[in-house]
Length: 132
Image (cartoon, one colour):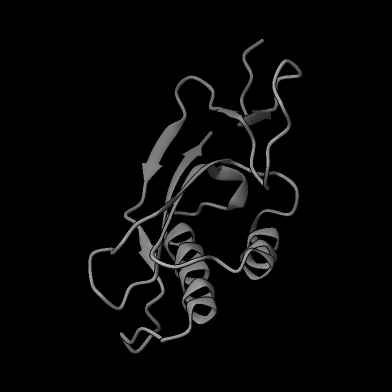
């Protein structure tokens, strides 16, 4: 029988993840793949707050909106790439993360860079999703 849902796994032969992510996320054959451009902390007025946590909140709001535009939900997200130009307040980001994902975490990569596409952007989050 063909598995018709996204599955997530942390192999027992590996150390546990160091954060809220899964080592492997598998999509079933013939699922539709969605790749979204990196979402940034711009608000509805096209402005970037100076505060990193405000940009984080706006970024998650923008992720939810882009997902909703395609009828996608958190369980459809299979991979997240996070890029930041300053140290992330992990308690704050984790609270936003948990509101989106609960405990069903996708695969994830995090990187710190000296700058992103515009000088005012402090964080950019790219999502990959699959609809089964």
